[in-house]
Length: 114
Length: 115
Image (cartoon, rainbow over all chains, first blue to last red; front, side, top):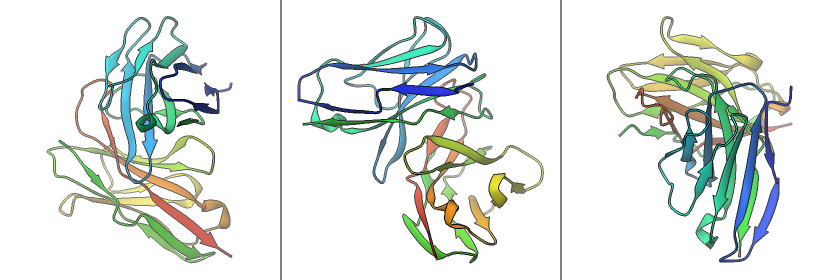
């Protein structure tokens, strides 16, 4: 049982390049989330999904797109990377998405945009 | 909107000493409170959570936290820390049943346990 995995672990992009981050979970969770973590700011929600085929915007969605074609996978895309998107990205999943639900996090992807 | 304050960005402490990491949240009718820990180069994992009932909550690895409604606080404590407790600790609050946007995380407190 791997839990939540993220690919890649590290990436360096040039401004204007595109990339996709992959998140996979094997816990059969309905809800999945993408966060970014910046120093002194905690985690901020980018996009989330309440089930296969659904996506919704979080607190900081601009410059990102997501897709959830399969229940176990949640993809985060950057169409035209900017230096402001340099951050650590975390994927998480939860069983039911309610107020009391525990979120399970992946190990993170460290992205640098030059 | 809900907000979470963690007053100490860094807390150095010697091994076997007690520690308290502070968390305050903005007032709300009802909240659920969480502490997550992030070990170096890893994702976050749940330490403990307060949902209802006893205001003293016990978590993994000997940590506990106390919910204080009047002071809108949820401070994390451990009576004797180990080197392995070196990590970043995040307080989080949930106050809306709006799927996917439940949690507001604090900025984190980096705990460094010194030998």
